[in-house]
Image 1 (cartoon, helix red, strand yellow):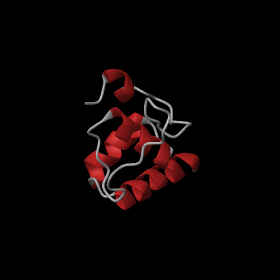
Image 2 (cartoon, rainbow, N blue to C red):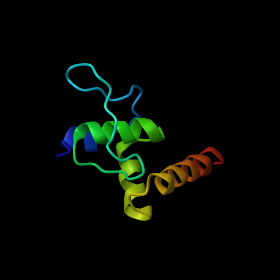
Image 3 (cartoon, helix red, strand yellow):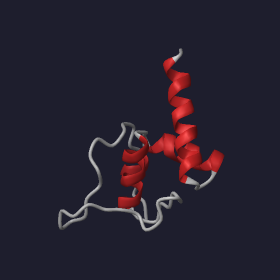
Image 4 (tube, rainbow, N blue to C red):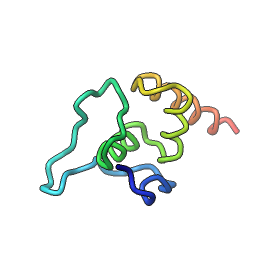
Length: 83
């Protein structure tokens, strides 16, 4: 389950998520954004270069398809850069 500190995170992840033993975490299905574990949340925020709030917003708007989330996050980033 996601902890409140992870949800409140306001900056993008800067390193890939790792397990306690130091091995790199990879999701079972890279086509679906699943957030069943903290490591999955860390993986996806790092992968998309977004904050926790941005990831949750994207999931609420476009669903769990990884490509759709990536496109949404990219579009939001572009729109913010144009301001």
